[in-house]
Structures are given as C-alpha cells and as structure tokens.
Length: 231
Image 1 (cartoon, rainbow, N blue to C red):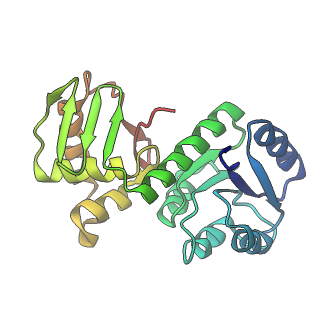
Image 2: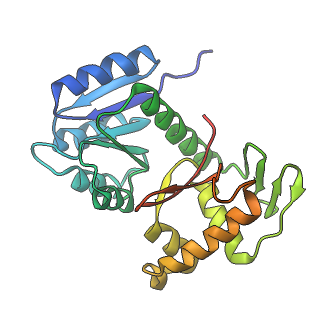
C-alpha cells in the first residue's frame, strides 16, 4: 500500500509565485491546495486539514501574522512563512506567534524543499513522541536524559540539558530567543538574553568539535537558534 501524498496549503496572492510553487511542489510529490487571501486560507485550512502551510505575510485582506495567530488557536499544522519582508522583527514576530520556519523571497526550490522536509519530519516526531534524536556524531536520548558525542557520554548541567532538550524537541525549527528563554527559564526570563548566550556557549564547548564554527547548534542572526536536523 502506497503512502499518502502530503498536502500543502499555499496562501499566497501573487499569481506568479503560486505558479512557481504549483509546478515545483507538484513535481516533488506534494498535493497542493491554493488560497489567494488570508480568509480563504483559513477556510481551506479548516476544510482540508493540510499537512503543511506555506504562508505569505503580504496578503490583500489579512496580514499573514494575523493568519498565523488565528491558525494557532486551533491548528498544530506546520507553518512556513514565505515573504519578501526580510526584517528580523518580522521573522521574530512570526515565529513567536507559532510559525515553524521563515524563508525570505527570493528563495531556491532546493532550500524550500529542505525546510518542508524538516517541518514535516518534526510534526511526525511530535505526534509519535520520538525520544531518540541523532545528527552527525550527536545523539540525545530524551527518555534516559543521556547525551553522546561520537559514542562518548557528555555530562550536562540541568539547565544545559533543558536547553538542548528544547532544541531537540523542535529540531530543524528556528526558536527565537524569547521562546527558548520562556521554555527553559520561565516566563519572567524572556528578556534575559545573556543567560541564553552563556549557556549556548557552554553547550557548544561540550558538543561541538569547534565551538567557534558549530555544526549542530546554529545561530539565526538576530532571531534565535536552530538545532540542525539532517535532511
């Protein structure tokens, strides 16, 4: 029995971009649903329950940030924002509102397909409660709270472990500084970015072969961090 074809809802008002996505994603094995406005996108999302949503921010009726916020009231569907807005604050706000990733126009189809695979894989792991994570020589066993690099166990402090576990649970996703601080340190620490820099530095020192050129714990400048997830 063949696996079901993943469905992607594209909420995008620009006809040329929709044609590009339709041709590229259909030829890559995805089923497309299209909407030209935010309201229609919300309707299509409720009607079809897609596996993933590609969302433009500059829609004619609703700002894409509003669409993201409204979707997150009832849907856990992965959302990848695709937008010409490249400012850090737009990225941060979209991610804080619940988007899973953000890609700035213009972009290559190879990069978009990689982001889609990561988002779909993360959604599947979340549903399945996968307790094992590995990338390169890094292995994390969430059930046993153990971390290994090249087969050797690495001992982390409780906060270092919480930070890594949070990144593992969202592997491949960009997490903003605010999201990480809230989840690891609590709601009152959402502005204490120095905590994050210090502990991320400590994690890199323990987990990376070269902490100044990290392979796993990646910085998204001005936005946050991403744990690499192999595609």
